[in-house]
Image 1 (cartoon, rainbow, N blue to C red):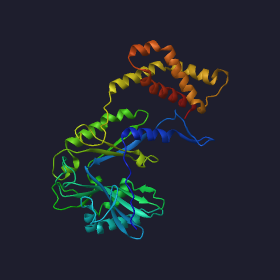
Image 2: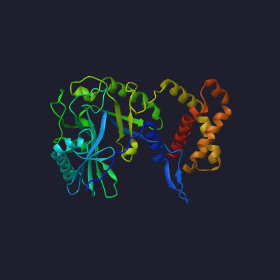
Image 3: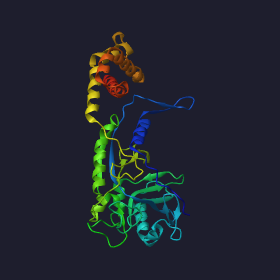
Length: 358
């Protein structure tokens, strides 16, 4: 029987930063069941992939493990009689394509038991949304994700390579001109963007992301693929690094032109100011102070050993000593303690890790 299995809500970039921090720093639970976090654990550099965010309505085709099929909007099961912008009618007419995709998945990529395959995408163009390049094109379904769902409704998402392989013979390619009918496409047949994010300094990627969004808004790559010039909405980014690739590490981003969108604009970053703050932090947390902290916290002069479990204590000593001894320098710089806390902590932690040969 058909059942509603939603595409996950995609958050803002700042939520991804918090999720990476929580995952990386989580160390289990204490005796009372409360979570334990290592606030000074080094954060990773992760690989992300961006795709064009289409201005339409979320839709999906579902196929269960006995071949039954259904269609859904973001919130409801839909049928040709109770439809959402005509997607169920389109899906019914193209049922063979979805079944072929499911067969391809079942033949090549099933490694664990599953109950359902969900083929998610954006049902867009036509009169579904206004004010973007793709408005007025024949309605199309652009697949952006495929999930295998087990009995507990836990989703396993196919990788990009897997999606491309199962779709290569089952969807239409854009041909640089307006199509003559409604078809199914893959989001990966349009522009994609690959980049890395250093989560020790995640703000440094924001300007690059804004530049990508601005280009998408000024000329939508999907519209361009069909010979249409006009505004795009933004991008969706997904982490593709192992261990960080579920939906909690996805984000939607737009620039400044698409002001009607509900997606938050990503703030620009003053890179020069950040570089100045980091340079000041390096001056304050110099090697002499770091060595002194090592001696005093771990009593290394008397045979004490550096202990990773006391990383927080060491970092706090360095920060406290910087602000006690260098407050005049900090005040004269015009930067505040909050801006310096992160860079000083990172320098102290990296120094300690080097001494531990980690």
